[in-house]
Image (spheres, rainbow, N blue to C red):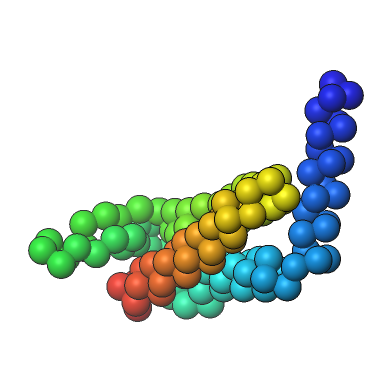
Length: 131
């Protein structure tokens, strides 16, 4: 048990160091976190007020068949939850690999930013099919 606590403290220190010493990692994390927040706020701003008792809402649009996936309103928050989990996991991987494999840590930072952008775009499209 003390071994796990020791590694957790070391990783916490690495996360702190990576944000303190590198502008690149700091800015990619800030932008990614901002996108996660925006992805979570869009449903509250546009979709939730317009539900008016609808049990199921469209969640996916296909160019061949139109809307092909319906679900309850709380399934809208799958994308922000996925983005938040990915952000946290990738921050931990960035911190763990920054000293040994700098390129891999850079890859995690850039990939997080790209995935958060894609999830944000997906939420915008889901919002558009629900208006």
